[in-house]
Image 1 (spheres, rainbow, N blue to C red):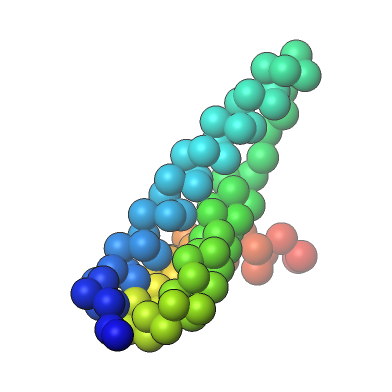
Image 2: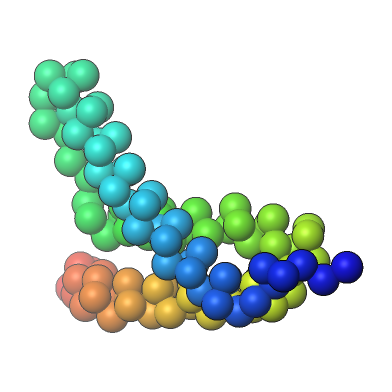
Length: 99
């Protein structure tokens, strides 16, 4: 039986919502850790953003197991788009860091 939620748009929305929510939660967790340790603990924004994008593997596994192939395709498209944006935004810093 094909689910009514097996649509490319569902995957793209999941690919966008999950990293944005995860980024906000990771920022809050960093602030909470800094306050708990009573010292300044900061994480690089590019690292937090990359971790947030990588959290898309969780719905990817769900869509794969539930045979939501169209949603999985949308999720992969959205994740690749976010990874491209991440690399364009932070890539210059990474490429110039060595020399």
